[in-house]
Length: 193
Image 1 (tube, rainbow, N blue to C red):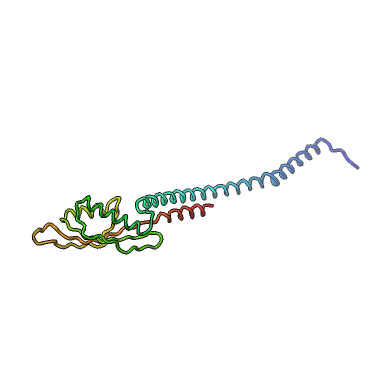
Image 2 (spheres, rainbow, N blue to C red):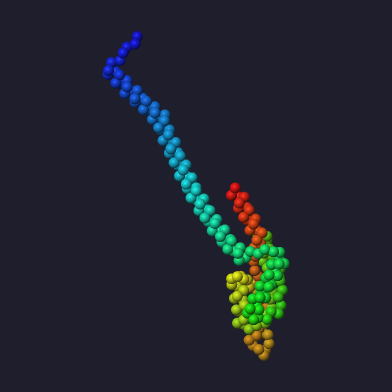
């Protein structure tokens, strides 16, 4: 037998149904969505931190590449070892002529390399006064030449002219083969993919 609810029972039933419905909606829908939102917010924060770190790494990498390219502009050369040696000899001979030095002997030395860079050396004998040789050495160690003085030996040229000396030098210079740059660029592009 079905009994009709009175007004008070209907109100209690309606309130109970509303409370149960709200509890079901809150526990079944709102609470899981809120937990999911918090989890997603945490993931977003982690990804933001990761992106900031990776951006810093990229900025440092760009700075390293800029420094490398600056060095490459100064020390990079195309050509075979023989062509580079010839250009070094021409560079030294031209600089000596500009300084008014008399070059008696100019010989290429041993080429040392490891594939990433090559060190070329040149031995040179010149007759000049001390000021001339010092200006010459200063010039060769400055931009754009960047030679290193490996050995230096002075000897009096004659007893009559005390200002003239014979100077024996071993100069060296490091070069980066430019084909290495293409390999580096290729490997960076490959790693980025």
